[in-house]
Length: 390
Ligand code: AMP
Image (cartoon, rainbow, N blue to C red; front, side, top):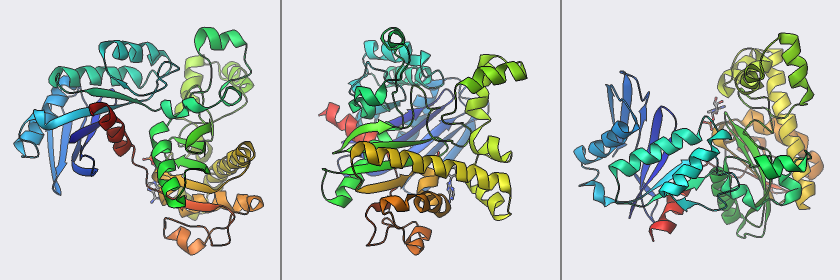
């Protein structure tokens, strides 16, 4: 069975084509700069990398290019070989407690939710419609980032705001990166050889979130109503005192939209260091002794450790901490900064294994196992899609 995983933005479509259930990647690729004359289409297959630059006017044309490319390069004989398409959707609100077939009604609901995820949901809906137009005869499945977090209890997902805000406007914590947290927590449980576990997944990439997973279910997560809450990130503040917003809006004489933009795109590593939002560049600057770059990493590590401590208490113990995503998987420095702050929990990391980005980086004496696991959101989307195709 062949399943395509799709992750689309307003000007891009990324895909992976899997043979299931073996989970072998047959092909992958992306269309970028949709709407531009110098858009690109990249197709990877059998260790070939094929790239074209051409005008791509819309998502429908992008999807056609992908399908034609797969047939032209004999990855597929025809489009009919694809048994299902799984689409990543950032926000499922409270409507989607599970993944759903992307019927017309579901696509409309995804659009309704775009109020809460303006950058993402509308683009996802446009992309699903394009795929359905080009491939009308296969099941299309909407796989929501927020669904994994729907198992949180009220004390975790509610804010202490007026209750009507929740009832009328859906103001609550939703959580994000759900497909990554689910995939990585499942792999962690396989390594622990049981699913009766208390684990904390640290997804640290450009966006970053921490999730507490008890017996395979999410019980707490650091991102909230939007992906701005939680720990500081590449360009996002993470949680700050909300009173700063109106205070600084007045001081800088800026609108709330401008303030929202600063919190999302000019803060985090970039805001503190004044140099970069990229962890590799930040590390370079740290090696050169830049104090503000050192502070940017320290601030994030301290907040990550704070969340871990709080989730340890919330779950009543901890079996494993797993680091994942670009920084979590690849930055021994950030992991050390975090783990050095966790000695009170009996966390002990073997620095040699940490430097090697080994799978298990804790010492045999450590009370909590510490893993680094490569996330794979695409394969999880493919797995969830198979369930519908069957
Ligand atoms: P993601 O959003 O998961 O793609 O992660 C992107 C982040 O991972 C960027 O800040 C990258 O600089 C960072 N990253 C990728 N590789 C490394 C590495 N080898 N060391 C440190 N950071 C890395």
